[in-house]
Picture 1 (cartoon, rainbow, N blue to C red):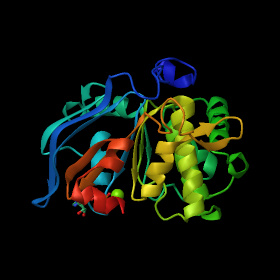
Picture 2: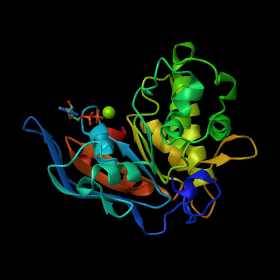
Picture 3: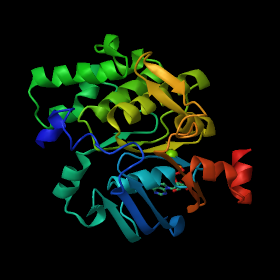
Length: 288
Ligand SMILES: Nc1ncnc2c1ncn2[C@@H]1O[C@H](COP(=O)(O)OP(=O)(O)O)[C@@H](O)[C@H]1O
Ligand SMILES: [Mg+2]
């Protein structure tokens, strides 16, 4: 395992750039297309996510959001186009090289995808066990990750004993355990009630504002997207606070960008202000 992953304070695993990104693309899609059984799912999709940015991916069910994330971590290969992750063409790499790249990516799967037969500690430590990290160190890191998601007390519990929101927290702890340089969140609030959803978005925000980890966040909830765009994690309270409208950034987190997909095509890619001011009829209807 690369040394920098073992050290949360190292400069390479925590972007030193500001939250607005420093112009180096962590994820880059160029004219990416993929079809299943002859049915196009993504069509000539191009966008990039800069270091330190949070790209919120919105769109109706079935429009290709999960497929896009699976392409980004090499679980699927495109039919055409180029996908670069950390500057490497992920679909052209050998299996072992893909694993090395994936070690730098944290993935929060839709529906949490926890192992029912493993307790919280072993679920969170899964990757560390695979990397043969010594047990004592693994335990320390599990506790650290569980503290981050405020779930230390559940370390010995099994997934069946947890609420949906707690399972999502475990899944986030598992994704951040190796201090990834990129996190892919697939519908982290899917299936949760509105209040629990907000607590999960708060965690996504905490990761963004404490570690400045580059992220792709899939959500079907516009509200999640706007909370991320207008709030910042507040270390003083451990919660979030609204960015003041009269601040230098006009009350908008500059590092949060939006990508709207519909029927496999990008209908919008830009900032929060551009999104709310968009004249595009589809975008306007989507925002209603
Ligand atoms: N492995 C697969 N094989 C066949 N079809 C798939 C596969 N994965 C996704 N699809 C199809 O691709 C489309 C987009 O799926 P998905 O990305 O999961 O949508 P969502 O935006 O809801 O996450 C859907 O029509 C889905 O049925
Ligand atoms: Mg999905």
